[in-house]
Length: 123
Image (cartoon, rainbow, N blue to C red; front, top):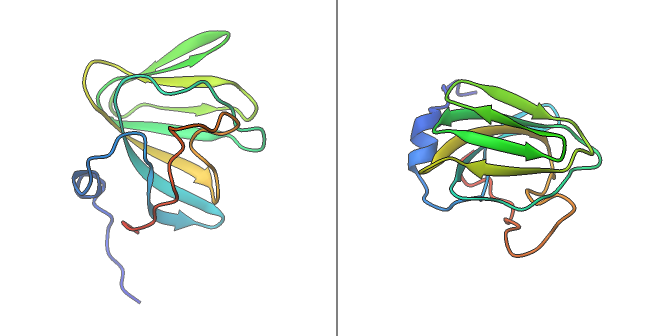
């Protein structure tokens, strides 16, 4: 078995797509994903799971119907399951790490053109 550290910055440098999470590791029934964000996403929710956002670079606002949470590098927030939210990148590109159960779709219940396909090419 090979034991190598995962270089998060290196994984983020390996792609350019926005709003398209890439699996970089697995932890039990969870996936660790990296993602690049720019602009505003869609309002959506995940009925069956919480969603963890950890900002690596940039500034991210997670809008929720009852208030916003602003995150900078090194800060994280867990959106509780069933809470409608809309991630919005500050000026410029945001790099983030997500922790979610296997099979979570990025647009949750909203669907639509911003729905990303499953991508584990960096794991």
